Figure 1 (cartoon, rainbow, N blue to C red):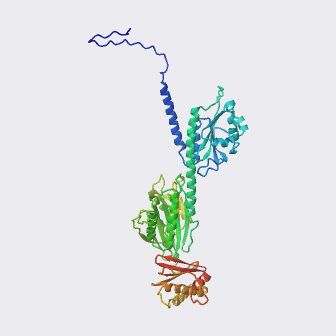
Figure 2: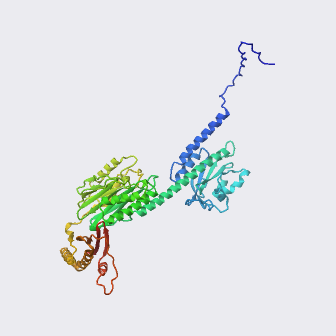
Figure 3: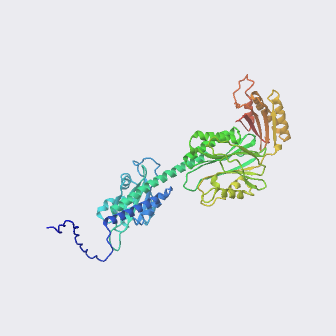
Length: 591
């Protein structure tokens, strides 16, 4: 029997009558089950996303541990304890190795473990077996017979007495912390029972899954932080080993230096400084900065510093040194090898400095009257760009003046533009002309704001004392057979004028030997220079690049004994190859 009549032709179908819905009961509207599940999943995903960001928020090894405990207590547990391996794994795959000792690194919301801050995992014990696992272990509910098999693990960690002190119904959950191929430690979560209701605590499967996810995130973050810290330490040691332990001290100029690593999470940079003695009592002053912060930056810094030392020893003009450094950086082959550098040569006899710049901070010159200025030099392009000309600028540097070379970390910070930093430095160095180089470095560092040093800093300060003209004698000598005799007479007259008669005989003999060797190879005039400082220094230069070498003379040989005499009589002697020849020198102590 049909419920409704058959419609007649030409008439619309009859609409069935609507049934009146039953009256609603008072109360909140019902939420569909799938909507409640979706809301719960969204809340859990939001919690995991926020927790992941917090755990990965620092490259300090303590940061992931701190963030892990913060997101777990009290959201997922009443207390949390983090035990880390000591010492930390050195990297690589060492899951098969014994975990060794675990140290309680952080405890939140409990005094558990305070009595045993360091625990050694016994081979074949419950703790060693747990650390080899990937999944959570537990929970152990104290007083529950089903969980007694897990008691040896926590008893090995905290001791039987500490477990007995916990309230019955306390739940413990252990989660190993694994890095990339290494076990790093153990996370223990604690939930306390509800005392009023007498209900024991518990971790359900969803709680264990969430805790395991966060433990995985924390293990990877900790592994990254440990690797980052290890690489930074290696880079820092590498860089410090490549910087000069002490600077050469030469008459006419006093030097001081500072190196400060950055205080932020940035890795070690490529800042360097150096000083190279040159013929004529001159001094080459170098400060540079390889762009970037990494182990590669420190390695490139070492290569460029070695190249700069070699080029400086050739006594090339500053712009030529930068040109060859630029070629060397291009041969290294990558953009990360760009560097800035300033190269200066101070002549204490002429009281002049010659400076060339390759995209670096301008040096600060302090005049004898106390006025400080930032040298207006052609900026140039950084080393490694290629195809750029560098130029040298010569400036007066009278006695009583000083020069400060520095890297950009001194004048640039997150909260201060570089122009403000340069002006603060110039103002700070004003009236610092009477300071020693050490004090000059100290004054320069006082412009740094506290706790705002992201980049490393290299300083090189030079105080110019000069050498009086009356303490220098210089001659050009033609390469002739009679030249050695004339050189002896000129040297003797200069020594007697200086009151150094006791040195005259030995000095004349050595001057004669060096000039004799020079005229045998020279095609242009030979130079002879005597300088009286705390020592007597003699330099003989010629245009031949061939360095003299001592050789064993035979009984019948008339030659080959000159350098042996120089080596026996002089305090020190040596030979330096220059861009246009060489200089052979010796030094004697003053009587």
